[in-house]
Length: 418
Image (cartoon, rainbow, N blue to C red):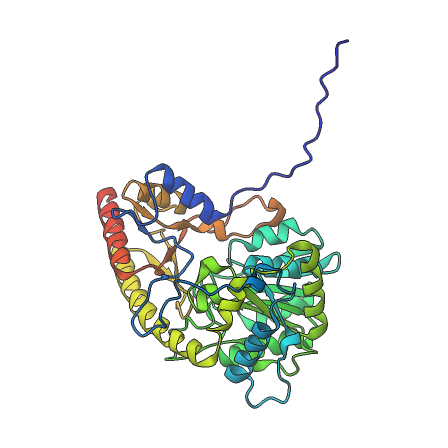
Protein backbone atom coordinates (compact mmCIF):
# COMPACT_ATOMS: atom_id res chain seq x y z
CA UNK A 1 0.00 0.00 0.00
CA UNK A 2 1.43 3.39 -1.03
CA UNK A 3 1.39 6.13 1.59
CA UNK A 4 1.00 9.80 0.84
CA UNK A 5 3.70 12.29 1.68
CA UNK A 6 2.22 14.67 4.18
CA UNK A 7 4.05 17.89 5.07
CA UNK A 8 3.73 18.24 8.80
CA UNK A 9 4.41 21.31 10.86
CA UNK A 10 7.51 20.88 13.00
CA UNK A 11 6.74 20.62 16.71
CA UNK A 12 10.13 22.15 17.56
CA UNK A 13 10.71 25.89 17.47
CA UNK A 14 13.88 27.20 15.87
CA UNK A 15 15.90 29.67 17.91
CA UNK A 16 18.92 31.60 16.69
CA UNK A 17 22.13 31.21 18.65
CA UNK A 18 22.91 33.81 21.28
CA UNK A 19 25.30 36.46 19.96
CA UNK A 20 28.34 35.46 22.01
CA UNK A 21 27.81 31.78 21.13
CA UNK A 22 27.73 32.66 17.43
CA UNK A 23 30.87 34.76 17.80
CA UNK A 24 32.80 32.01 19.59
CA UNK A 25 31.72 29.34 17.09
CA UNK A 26 32.85 31.50 14.18
CA UNK A 27 36.17 32.12 15.92
CA UNK A 28 36.61 28.38 16.53
CA UNK A 29 36.26 27.76 12.78
CA UNK A 30 39.29 30.03 12.32
CA UNK A 31 41.34 28.16 14.92
CA UNK A 32 40.45 29.87 18.20
CA UNK A 33 40.64 27.84 21.39
CA UNK A 34 40.71 29.03 24.98
CA UNK A 35 44.31 29.45 26.07
CA UNK A 36 45.60 29.67 22.48
CA UNK A 37 48.71 31.91 22.72
CA UNK A 38 48.13 33.67 19.37
CA UNK A 39 44.48 34.66 19.95
CA UNK A 40 42.96 37.47 21.99
CA UNK A 41 39.33 37.39 23.11
CA UNK A 42 37.97 40.92 23.46
CA UNK A 43 34.43 39.57 23.19
CA UNK A 44 34.56 37.70 26.45
CA UNK A 45 31.54 37.98 28.75
CA UNK A 46 33.14 36.53 31.85
CA UNK A 47 35.79 38.13 34.07
CA UNK A 48 39.36 36.96 34.37
CA UNK A 49 39.08 34.05 36.82
CA UNK A 50 42.74 34.03 37.90
CA UNK A 51 43.97 35.64 41.08
CA UNK A 52 44.50 39.38 40.70
CA UNK A 53 46.40 41.75 42.96
CA UNK A 54 44.68 42.07 46.31
CA UNK A 55 41.92 39.55 45.56
CA UNK A 56 40.82 36.57 47.62
CA UNK A 57 42.69 33.32 47.16
CA UNK A 58 41.02 31.26 44.45
CA UNK A 59 39.10 28.13 45.45
CA UNK A 60 40.53 25.11 43.65
CA UNK A 61 38.80 22.34 45.56
CA UNK A 62 35.70 21.96 47.73
CA UNK A 63 34.78 19.63 50.57
CA UNK A 64 31.82 17.36 49.82
CA UNK A 65 30.05 15.44 52.57
CA UNK A 66 27.84 12.46 51.81
CA UNK A 67 24.68 14.50 52.50
CA UNK A 68 25.76 17.03 49.82
CA UNK A 69 25.08 14.43 47.14
CA UNK A 70 21.36 14.89 47.78
CA UNK A 71 19.06 17.62 46.50
CA UNK A 72 19.25 21.09 48.01
CA UNK A 73 16.00 22.95 48.79
CA UNK A 74 14.51 24.34 45.58
CA UNK A 75 14.71 27.90 46.97
CA UNK A 76 18.35 27.33 47.89
CA UNK A 77 20.26 26.36 51.03
CA UNK A 78 18.84 28.30 53.94
CA UNK A 79 22.32 29.21 55.21
CA UNK A 80 23.23 30.78 51.89
CA UNK A 81 19.89 32.63 51.68
CA UNK A 82 20.55 34.11 55.14
CA UNK A 83 24.09 35.14 54.18
CA UNK A 84 22.95 36.85 50.97
CA UNK A 85 20.24 38.74 52.88
CA UNK A 86 22.78 39.78 55.54
CA UNK A 87 25.24 40.97 52.88
CA UNK A 88 22.69 43.32 51.33
CA UNK A 89 21.50 44.55 54.72
CA UNK A 90 25.05 45.40 55.81
CA UNK A 91 26.00 47.01 52.50
CA UNK A 92 22.84 48.96 51.71
CA UNK A 93 20.25 48.89 54.52
CA UNK A 94 22.07 49.56 57.79
CA UNK A 95 19.81 52.48 58.68
CA UNK A 96 16.58 50.96 57.39
CA UNK A 97 13.88 49.41 59.58
CA UNK A 98 12.94 47.10 56.71
CA UNK A 99 15.53 44.34 56.42
CA UNK A 100 15.97 41.42 54.05
CA UNK A 101 15.63 37.91 55.51
CA UNK A 102 16.15 34.43 54.09
CA UNK A 103 12.53 34.54 52.89
CA UNK A 104 13.44 37.45 50.59
CA UNK A 105 16.09 35.40 48.77
CA UNK A 106 15.91 32.64 46.17
CA UNK A 107 19.01 30.81 44.88
CA UNK A 108 19.15 29.36 41.36
CA UNK A 109 21.64 27.91 38.89
CA UNK A 110 22.83 31.09 37.19
CA UNK A 111 21.41 34.47 36.20
CA UNK A 112 19.53 33.30 33.11
CA UNK A 113 17.81 30.62 35.17
CA UNK A 114 16.84 33.24 37.75
CA UNK A 115 15.28 35.25 34.91
CA UNK A 116 13.53 32.14 33.59
CA UNK A 117 11.97 31.51 36.99
CA UNK A 118 10.85 35.14 37.24
CA UNK A 119 9.31 35.20 33.76
CA UNK A 120 7.59 31.86 34.33
CA UNK A 121 6.01 33.45 37.42
CA UNK A 122 4.48 36.38 35.55
CA UNK A 123 0.81 36.60 34.70
CA UNK A 124 -0.31 36.57 31.07
CA UNK A 125 0.01 39.60 28.78
CA UNK A 126 2.20 41.61 31.16
CA UNK A 127 3.30 44.81 29.43
CA UNK A 128 7.05 44.73 30.02
CA UNK A 129 9.49 47.42 28.92
CA UNK A 130 13.15 46.93 28.11
CA UNK A 131 15.94 49.19 26.87
CA UNK A 132 17.86 49.25 23.61
CA UNK A 133 20.69 48.35 23.76
CA UNK A 134 20.89 45.90 26.66
CA UNK A 135 22.11 42.40 27.53
CA UNK A 136 21.71 40.15 24.49
CA UNK A 137 20.18 37.18 26.34
CA UNK A 138 17.15 39.26 27.35
CA UNK A 139 15.82 38.82 23.80
CA UNK A 140 15.56 35.07 24.24
CA UNK A 141 13.85 35.42 27.63
CA UNK A 142 11.34 37.90 26.18
CA UNK A 143 10.65 35.59 23.21
CA UNK A 144 10.47 32.18 24.89
CA UNK A 145 8.02 33.22 27.58
CA UNK A 146 4.98 34.37 25.63
CA UNK A 147 3.12 35.64 28.71
CA UNK A 148 4.47 39.16 28.14
CA UNK A 149 4.02 42.00 25.69
CA UNK A 150 7.57 43.39 25.22
CA UNK A 151 7.82 47.14 24.57
CA UNK A 152 11.19 48.71 23.68
CA UNK A 153 12.60 51.96 25.04
CA UNK A 154 15.23 53.04 22.54
CA UNK A 155 18.12 54.98 24.09
CA UNK A 156 19.75 57.81 22.19
CA UNK A 157 23.34 57.77 20.94
CA UNK A 158 23.32 61.58 21.31
CA UNK A 159 22.66 61.13 25.04
CA UNK A 160 25.38 58.48 25.31
CA UNK A 161 22.76 55.71 25.60
CA UNK A 162 21.96 56.96 29.11
CA UNK A 163 18.45 56.67 30.55
CA UNK A 164 16.68 60.04 30.48
CA UNK A 165 14.51 59.83 33.60
CA UNK A 166 12.00 62.45 32.50
CA UNK A 167 11.43 60.70 29.17
CA UNK A 168 11.34 57.35 30.96
CA UNK A 169 8.53 58.44 33.29
CA UNK A 170 6.44 59.75 30.40
CA UNK A 171 7.04 56.55 28.43
CA UNK A 172 5.88 54.14 31.13
CA UNK A 173 2.78 56.24 31.83
CA UNK A 174 1.88 56.60 28.15
CA UNK A 175 2.38 52.88 27.46
CA UNK A 176 0.81 51.54 30.69
CA UNK A 177 3.99 49.63 31.53
CA UNK A 178 3.54 46.97 34.24
CA UNK A 179 7.05 45.53 34.44
CA UNK A 180 10.58 46.53 33.45
CA UNK A 181 13.71 44.53 32.65
CA UNK A 182 17.16 46.13 32.68
CA UNK A 183 20.77 45.83 33.82
CA UNK A 184 22.69 48.31 35.99
CA UNK A 185 25.60 48.79 35.32
CA UNK A 186 24.60 48.06 31.77
CA UNK A 187 25.89 45.41 29.41
CA UNK A 188 26.99 46.48 26.74
CA UNK A 189 27.40 50.24 27.35
CA UNK A 190 28.91 50.34 30.83
CA UNK A 191 26.46 53.11 31.74
CA UNK A 192 25.36 53.42 35.34
CA UNK A 193 22.34 54.72 37.22
CA UNK A 194 23.90 55.86 40.47
CA UNK A 195 22.76 57.37 43.76
CA UNK A 196 20.22 60.14 43.10
CA UNK A 197 19.53 58.89 39.56
CA UNK A 198 18.88 55.38 40.83
CA UNK A 199 16.77 56.70 43.71
CA UNK A 200 14.63 58.74 41.29
CA UNK A 201 14.34 55.76 38.97
CA UNK A 202 13.08 53.51 41.79
CA UNK A 203 10.65 56.20 42.97
CA UNK A 204 9.20 56.52 39.45
CA UNK A 205 8.68 52.78 39.22
CA UNK A 206 7.15 52.59 42.70
CA UNK A 207 4.77 55.50 42.06
CA UNK A 208 3.62 53.87 38.80
CA UNK A 209 3.31 50.34 40.26
CA UNK A 210 5.93 48.90 37.91
CA UNK A 211 7.59 45.58 38.77
CA UNK A 212 11.35 46.12 38.33
CA UNK A 213 13.50 43.14 37.31
CA UNK A 214 16.96 44.57 37.86
CA UNK A 215 20.10 42.69 36.82
CA UNK A 216 22.87 43.90 39.16
CA UNK A 217 25.53 41.31 38.35
CA UNK A 218 28.13 44.07 37.81
CA UNK A 219 27.22 46.07 40.92
CA UNK A 220 30.78 46.04 42.26
CA UNK A 221 32.43 46.84 38.89
CA UNK A 222 32.25 50.60 39.46
CA UNK A 223 34.92 53.06 38.28
CA UNK A 224 33.45 56.55 38.76
CA UNK A 225 33.78 56.50 42.57
CA UNK A 226 36.55 54.67 44.42
CA UNK A 227 35.46 51.58 46.41
CA UNK A 228 31.81 52.20 45.46
CA UNK A 229 29.17 49.47 45.15
CA UNK A 230 25.79 50.37 43.65
CA UNK A 231 22.45 48.64 44.23
CA UNK A 232 18.81 49.65 44.19
CA UNK A 233 18.59 47.88 47.58
CA UNK A 234 19.68 51.18 49.10
CA UNK A 235 16.54 52.98 47.87
CA UNK A 236 13.85 50.40 48.59
CA UNK A 237 11.41 51.62 51.24
CA UNK A 238 10.00 48.26 52.27
CA UNK A 239 11.53 45.00 51.09
CA UNK A 240 8.15 43.25 51.19
CA UNK A 241 5.99 45.83 49.44
CA UNK A 242 8.26 47.50 46.88
CA UNK A 243 8.08 45.45 43.68
CA UNK A 244 11.83 45.41 43.08
CA UNK A 245 13.65 42.19 42.18
CA UNK A 246 17.44 42.37 42.43
CA UNK A 247 19.51 39.74 40.62
CA UNK A 248 23.18 38.97 41.16
CA UNK A 249 25.50 36.08 41.98
CA UNK A 250 29.07 34.90 42.27
CA UNK A 251 29.87 34.77 38.53
CA UNK A 252 30.90 38.45 38.38
CA UNK A 253 31.11 39.69 41.99
CA UNK A 254 33.43 36.87 43.08
CA UNK A 255 34.61 35.90 39.56
CA UNK A 256 33.33 32.30 39.56
CA UNK A 257 31.17 32.26 36.40
CA UNK A 258 31.42 28.50 35.88
CA UNK A 259 29.84 27.73 39.26
CA UNK A 260 26.43 28.98 38.03
CA UNK A 261 25.17 30.16 41.43
CA UNK A 262 22.96 33.25 41.41
CA UNK A 263 20.21 34.81 43.50
CA UNK A 264 17.24 37.12 43.41
CA UNK A 265 16.06 39.31 46.29
CA UNK A 266 12.52 40.66 46.50
CA UNK A 267 9.24 40.69 48.44
CA UNK A 268 8.50 37.43 50.28
CA UNK A 269 5.36 36.65 48.30
CA UNK A 270 7.10 37.08 44.96
CA UNK A 271 10.12 35.07 46.10
CA UNK A 272 7.79 32.29 47.19
CA UNK A 273 6.29 32.16 43.68
CA UNK A 274 9.71 32.22 42.03
CA UNK A 275 10.85 29.39 44.29
CA UNK A 276 7.73 27.34 43.58
CA UNK A 277 8.27 27.69 39.82
CA UNK A 278 11.74 26.24 40.31
CA UNK A 279 10.26 23.05 41.75
CA UNK A 280 9.18 21.99 38.27
CA UNK A 281 11.34 24.21 36.04
CA UNK A 282 14.83 23.21 37.22
CA UNK A 283 14.64 21.53 40.63
CA UNK A 284 17.18 23.74 42.38
CA UNK A 285 20.82 24.81 42.22
CA UNK A 286 23.90 22.61 42.64
CA UNK A 287 24.07 21.50 46.28
CA UNK A 288 27.85 21.12 46.85
CA UNK A 289 28.60 24.44 45.15
CA UNK A 290 26.00 26.29 47.21
CA UNK A 291 27.72 24.96 50.32
CA UNK A 292 31.09 26.17 49.03
CA UNK A 293 29.63 29.61 48.23
CA UNK A 294 28.59 29.92 51.89
CA UNK A 295 32.29 30.10 52.76
CA UNK A 296 32.90 33.21 50.66
CA UNK A 297 29.66 35.25 50.71
CA UNK A 298 30.24 37.71 53.53
CA UNK A 299 30.87 41.43 53.69
CA UNK A 300 34.63 41.29 54.35
CA UNK A 301 35.33 38.95 51.44
CA UNK A 302 33.06 40.93 49.17
CA UNK A 303 34.75 44.25 49.97
CA UNK A 304 38.22 42.78 49.49
CA UNK A 305 37.29 41.27 46.13
CA UNK A 306 35.49 44.46 45.03
CA UNK A 307 38.49 46.69 45.77
CA UNK A 308 40.79 44.32 43.85
CA UNK A 309 38.36 44.17 40.91
CA UNK A 310 37.98 47.93 40.69
CA UNK A 311 41.72 48.57 40.78
CA UNK A 312 42.52 45.91 38.19
CA UNK A 313 39.64 46.56 35.80
CA UNK A 314 39.89 50.36 35.92
CA UNK A 315 43.45 50.18 34.62
CA UNK A 316 42.34 47.96 31.75
CA UNK A 317 39.33 50.18 30.98
CA UNK A 318 41.46 53.33 30.83
CA UNK A 319 44.05 51.64 28.64
CA UNK A 320 41.45 50.29 26.21
CA UNK A 321 39.61 53.61 25.87
CA UNK A 322 42.88 55.41 25.12
CA UNK A 323 43.94 52.88 22.49
CA UNK A 324 40.54 52.67 20.77
CA UNK A 325 40.21 56.45 20.60
CA UNK A 326 43.64 56.70 19.02
CA UNK A 327 42.55 54.18 16.36
CA UNK A 328 39.59 56.37 15.38
CA UNK A 329 36.97 54.25 17.15
CA UNK A 330 34.33 56.31 18.98
CA UNK A 331 33.65 55.25 22.57
CA UNK A 332 29.96 55.70 23.44
CA UNK A 333 28.97 56.45 27.03
CA UNK A 334 31.06 57.06 30.12
CA UNK A 335 31.90 53.41 30.90
CA UNK A 336 31.31 53.86 34.63
CA UNK A 337 30.65 50.19 35.30
CA UNK A 338 30.75 46.56 34.07
CA UNK A 339 33.69 45.56 31.83
CA UNK A 340 32.56 46.48 28.33
CA UNK A 341 33.10 49.35 25.92
CA UNK A 342 30.28 50.14 23.49
CA UNK A 343 31.92 51.64 20.43
CA UNK A 344 30.96 53.30 17.15
CA UNK A 345 32.90 52.26 14.04
CA UNK A 346 31.44 54.84 11.64
CA UNK A 347 34.72 56.75 11.21
CA UNK A 348 36.68 53.68 10.11
CA UNK A 349 37.22 52.68 6.45
CA UNK A 350 34.03 51.51 4.75
CA UNK A 351 35.10 47.86 4.56
CA UNK A 352 35.30 47.62 8.37
CA UNK A 353 32.85 50.26 9.65
CA UNK A 354 30.00 47.75 10.12
CA UNK A 355 30.06 45.71 13.31
CA UNK A 356 29.72 42.33 11.60
CA UNK A 357 32.39 43.14 9.00
CA UNK A 358 34.74 44.41 11.72
CA UNK A 359 34.23 41.23 13.74
CA UNK A 360 34.75 38.89 10.76
CA UNK A 361 37.84 40.72 9.51
CA UNK A 362 39.22 40.61 13.05
CA UNK A 363 39.13 36.82 13.05
CA UNK A 364 41.77 36.86 10.33
CA UNK A 365 43.93 38.82 12.79
CA UNK A 366 43.12 36.35 15.59
CA UNK A 367 41.11 38.74 17.74
CA UNK A 368 37.44 38.57 18.80
CA UNK A 369 34.77 41.21 19.54
CA UNK A 370 30.94 41.17 19.49
CA UNK A 371 28.92 42.99 16.78
CA UNK A 372 26.44 45.56 18.08
CA UNK A 373 23.46 43.97 16.32
CA UNK A 374 23.37 41.26 18.98
CA UNK A 375 22.33 43.90 21.54
CA UNK A 376 19.41 45.02 19.40
CA UNK A 377 16.73 43.19 21.37
CA UNK A 378 13.91 42.41 18.97
CA UNK A 379 11.62 39.74 20.50
CA UNK A 380 9.73 37.65 17.94
CA UNK A 381 11.65 39.63 15.23
CA UNK A 382 8.64 41.90 14.69
CA UNK A 383 10.77 44.93 13.74
CA UNK A 384 12.43 44.71 10.31
CA UNK A 385 15.01 47.48 10.66
CA UNK A 386 18.17 46.37 12.46
CA UNK A 387 19.79 48.72 14.94
CA UNK A 388 23.41 49.18 16.03
CA UNK A 389 24.91 47.91 12.76
CA UNK A 390 27.91 50.23 13.16
CA UNK A 391 28.43 49.40 16.84
CA UNK A 392 30.72 46.85 18.42
CA UNK A 393 31.23 45.65 22.00
CA UNK A 394 34.75 45.26 23.33
CA UNK A 395 35.45 43.53 26.63
CA UNK A 396 38.30 44.37 28.99
CA UNK A 397 37.54 41.33 31.17
CA UNK A 398 40.63 39.29 30.33
CA UNK A 399 44.20 39.87 31.50
CA UNK A 400 46.06 42.99 30.42
CA UNK A 401 48.53 41.03 28.27
CA UNK A 402 45.64 39.67 26.21
CA UNK A 403 44.04 43.09 25.90
CA UNK A 404 47.29 44.62 24.63
CA UNK A 405 47.70 41.77 22.14
CA UNK A 406 44.14 42.16 20.88
CA UNK A 407 44.32 45.93 20.52
CA UNK A 408 47.63 45.60 18.67
CA UNK A 409 45.91 43.22 16.26
CA UNK A 410 43.02 45.64 15.68
CA UNK A 411 45.39 48.54 15.18
CA UNK A 412 47.22 46.55 12.50
CA UNK A 413 43.92 45.57 10.87
CA UNK A 414 42.68 49.18 10.74
CA UNK A 415 45.99 50.40 9.29
CA UNK A 416 45.87 47.62 6.68
CA UNK A 417 42.46 48.82 5.48
CA UNK A 418 43.28 52.52 5.42
